[in-house]
Image (tube, rainbow, N blue to C red; front, side, top):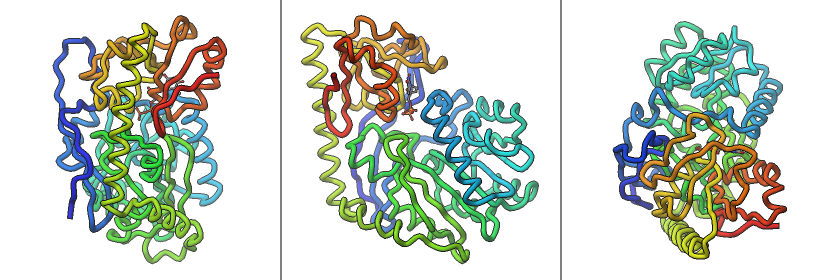
Length: 394
Ligand code: TYD
């Protein structure tokens, strides 16, 4: 049974940046619910995948050194631990992970054709389609079953998880491994990161909910790790239900205990957490209003999807955040949807004459603090809302 957890009225899609300020865009209510049966938190009545992941999708994971290093380390680690002969990646983006694999034995799936073209050009056979029953059957027929199926920040975007997981099972060798990375819902709750709620993020996996879904679809969780990207990411290790692979009960039981203590499987406890997040939203707007009333310059740092969510969920606009800087060329000289905050190109002079930077890309906080040490040393301040509103200064 589905129960409403938190809802937002008229939120634009987080990647629908405006080319000009007066462009009309569609906004959609965002309703997050809790399933009493599987304990899964997810979006209900969502927008269609074709609208969410168009052919000019802007998110490029290769823009961050943290992510480049993360996927290199991850690729090397998985190759060493499991020595797969062949590999399939679901949601390969610009090839940040598969570039460390042999193109002759590696297949990619990426529905956003602007990115699929990049990996096809890199000699990786890339299917530019949505993952599901039809595509998985085609891949199995043409390339056989896989030793390793990897998917980062994609399974949590897919609507229709049962079909998604049974399709994975059909493409997996008897002793094959399915590795999934996605933001940990436990960490979302710990960070009061309400800006992780957006239409593209269909599901918010706790270990408990993900394990329930796997079991429902003939798969088994055999290990779990927490990796420090995207504000805390779970790496789930999955195999066939009847596989002989050893299950790491120590790890799994440890996370189950922590998740239960935190209340990820309890509707009432989750409702309390949502109230804390709502207070976080109010604090952000009040603080920015106060700082602006002192005539300070405030800009955003990183036009992430999360920043766009914050701007709209907290009802911010260019009178509270003058503009936001970003290194991604495709985002520059555009505007955030609905909140209409201009996005400007980042350069080494971007922070001159700036008093406060609101940390839109808070998940890269350490990378940014290191890079902007000069700004901090000259009296500049960062504002972050994770886990609650505070000013970072030296
Ligand atoms: P990211 O958190 O990767 O994704 P999401 O959109 O899922 O929330 O977005 C981070 C954004 O911040 C991305 O557009 C790149 C930008 N960025 C900078 O401009 N400078 C930086 O130093 C870093 C680390 C990121």
